[in-house]
Length: 280
Image (tube, rainbow, N blue to C red; front, side, top):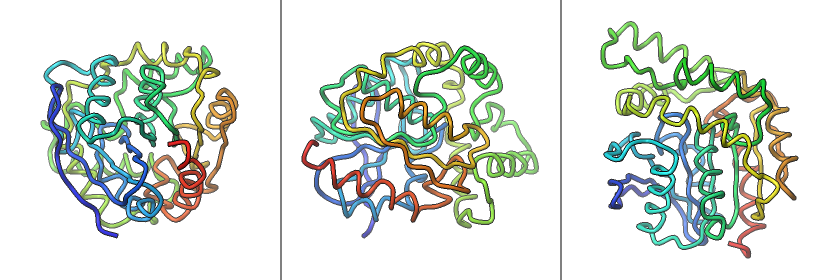
């Protein structure tokens, strides 16, 4: 199955998307300051089970940079406007890493619009202990992985070193990383708007204290269990906090499991999409 590409316009800016399949809609939200390209290894296969649309968040990839800022309310409203422009009234969400933060933010802002939820290795969404909140503060000061604020001023050698560091961080076994991903990562780092770095740092604490017990949509937590940033216990606690949520771990796989183990990721998510199609 081929991947489509296009743009939709909203009052918040223009969004780029990549899509595959037909049926009940599911919106895929990128982590960090990455892009829809991060889903290319799974989008066609999952498109056999739903209408799967991966977007570049504002300030990422080929989408516009946000002219209204990157605070939680603005970006959440922008994502809902993007869903409107795509023609999605009620839709599923798949959010990886920082994309999990935005997926949860949509669920809390507009629960009636979310039909089903998949959270993937997201240390920035879900309940947080006080120790984890302190860790989030420190991570926010260092900046998001894969989005160095000084990218534009780096030498070629420094950029390659940053790419290497990011790959070592987000994959358990860099040998499994597709050859083209290195170029994707370099491109994404250059495209990302540095203004978004740290824009929601305080919101991580508020997100950690949200009422996860009130989430009513079917929820699946998928976790690469060799994630050096977010251990699997984190994913299990997120699942335990949400009524009826299920946890599926992918052993030996790192933070970006949809890239490192696309077959395992599809095997985890596709049945969930099939099971929840009636509720979508």
